[in-house]
Amino acid sequence: MDGLSGVLIRVGRLLFAVAMAFFGVQCIIFARGGVGLVPGPPWTQGHIGLAWIAGIGFILAAVFIVTQWQGRLAANLLGVCMLLQVLFFYLPRLVTHVHDPRPWTSGFEVLALSGASFVLAGALPDEVHKEGGGQVWLTEAARYMFAIALVVFGVQHFMYAQFVAALVTPWIPGHLFWAYFVGVAFFAAAMCIGMGRKVRLAGILLGVMFLLFVVLLHIPRMAAAPHDGNEWTSGFIALACGGASFVLAGALPEKHRG
Image 1: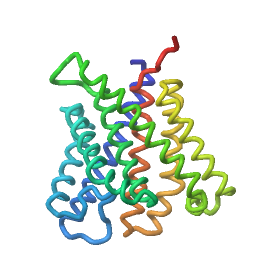
Image 2 (image 1 turned 180 degrees about the vertical axis):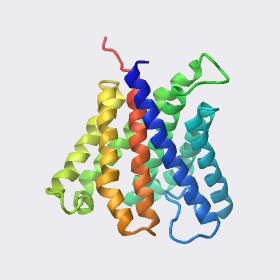
Image 3 (image 1 turned 180 degrees about the horizontal axis):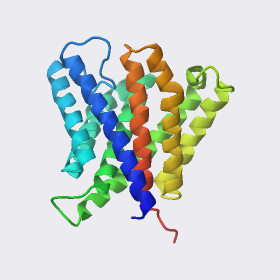
């Protein structure tokens, strides 16, 4: 691993952990009956007991990932829990409400974060199996999980271009252009990550794009609606995806031709 890879993984790991800690705080606020912020994607489906478990779990995972003490175990468990949520909560809704964009968006956001967790786990020290060989197949599967999620995001930017354009910050010109541009960028990044070609470049550019979303789109919207949990969730999802993109850029190997 070269120096740039290490920097990308370290920065991405910290951004990802901050987002996970926020999701934990969201769940605990909900569990305590707080108003304003609500958990979403619906990590706990509104169940107070699950909200406590999820909240504490997110925060512990964030701490372990930052400190790297049992970080690989924590990241793998986080990835498994998110993948189970996709399979048992979102997938049935996708089948029964195929034309509803909400479960597609939230479900594939969670799938992307699940894949990122597995890739991050592979980049963290293994305190149990020092050789770390058992993580390779999981990291390779996670590559495709993240790429598939990007394809879905890209499709949605074309299907709902007018809605996406309406979200663009008012002072930025060409709203509809940016909606389509971001959709194309998602497709391009998905191709690079899935095929293992120019992964580092694609991951860096994707991470920068997500961070620009946070700064130019989500922070102004959160400031305008500080009690809207959906706005906060969207912002920290973008932050987590930005961190995940940097982790993928630093951790995923390029596939050689031939």
